[in-house]
Length: 274
Image 1 (spheres, rainbow, N blue to C red):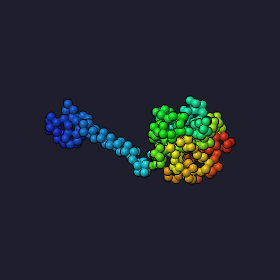
Image 2 (image 1 turned 90 degrees about the vertical axis):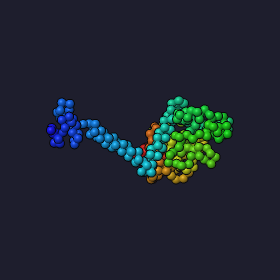
Image 3 (image 1 turned 60 degrees about the vertical axis):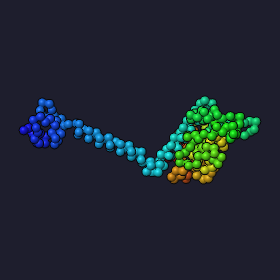
């Protein structure tokens, strides 16, 4: 009786696959390759299982950290989108968006946020707004009553004000987006990469169409409802600069540095701290 040359077990005359080691004798009776129908399948399964485990760990890591990394990253993405929207607005109209002022009444009627709506896939909301009326006029309820995902920081729980208007968790730099007439990129003489455009806020939140959604970075960070701030560990606050780059600052940044980053043409030689 023939024996398996691999493991030495006895084989029947017509046995092609060794029942002990799964070696294949081949059709001519010679010993061939190991049977892949079992061994190869097991290897494939192990590799697939390992790959799935790696993917699962990648998805679970943010959850293990309370989701903080994921939420902060999403907020940074929102700021990036808003920065790009401002650039698209400037390309279309030759200036930065500002609060729209009714000359006959001398008051701001709609915020800079309304101006960027067409550039963040919210053209329907933009078209639903009557610009001859104030943002909170009942006639504009349909236009300003929708929650805009890009305006919401996933780390901030409050999404509506006391009247039910959806909020924005970001504010514009009053020295850049609060000017009348509107600024242009040429007015940012300190450098577009060294000037704050928009940043995170957690207190004193306003409806997203409110024309007063502007703050002064020079007042400090996480220092009350008039300042920029965030919910992240360590008090780090994220901003998008005029050049569209997302940066972050810790609350211990000296006030002179914040004031320099706030002004577009103050002549200060300062950059975002590393």
